[in-house]
Length: 406
Picture 1 (spheres, rainbow, N blue to C red):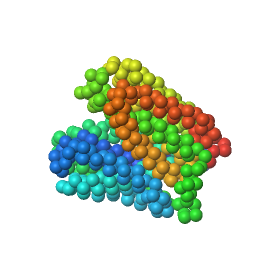
Picture 2: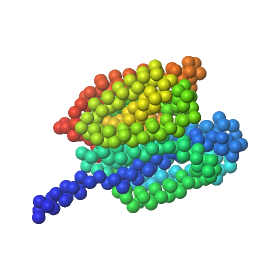
Picture 3: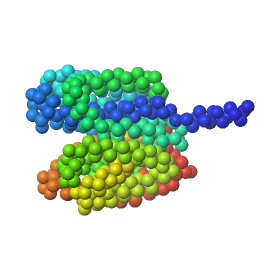
Picture 4: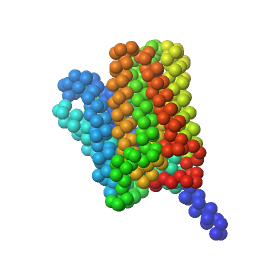
């Protein structure tokens, strides 16, 4: 009887809290869709607010700026608060500011609402990885993070097409209104299924400079920037890039291939993140780099381009899990602060990819993209390769001598 009880207790401990983790995934999904929604609705937003398309496009920029500027200070300011309270605060921010966007008739009010929606996203992104890790035992942290990140590739592949369809079907204001309705559902979901945890006591909080100087943190952040710059350089300008293969009218198909492949990448990362994080990350960077070279030579061939999109999707799908696990492991008790730095690095790379891609597009055209990506990925690979002791250590995450924050 005692043996049976012990086995049942162990099975209960080993069972992942999938419903709660999926609530975190839904939060990430809302972050991404809220960010990308205007991209598919620019003509309607432009007409509705009586501004040019370029000014309507600044609603995306305002959101990204809100995330970059708010992530670190808000994470530090709320580090002592109950964790579910902070998560709900971020989600309620989406509810409020998407609702304001839906009813606003003034451009500057809309822009302000988008900025503060980005602020909410910055706070949410700094929470999600640490929250997922805290919900499970140390041995399950990688798998838990993979589940919590599943909303990202779904949103990336479906966000713009979803926004375009909603805008055409019900109007752009209702598209944002529907996001608010989804947020109400998420609030109830979090209250029902996501456990609460205490914040950090004041004496236990790691100062920002100390966390930044922790061995391993800076190499991981540098890899984040190099990898995401390469990714966003192409992702931002995917429409003109696939046009060279006569796929300009099938961007939705290309994004679907990418999104499905990214889901596979999340599964792969979840399977190997604990026992072979370093090897999986290096192989992902190498595969993406080789894919860039293939695109540099054969991007005009539709079949080759679609296979390359799938390979790229697999490597990108696991990136969030691998990088955030490595960063949280390196930072230990300063994981939340380090993950807020990740939000800044990630969103800066989104903006930087758009800027760099625009320069390359004007100067040399889309043919320059693959070679610039290959260079960035080579830099990221070299940094990750050298960070063998701190940042991306070899072997199993749970090997003796490694201590992680929880």
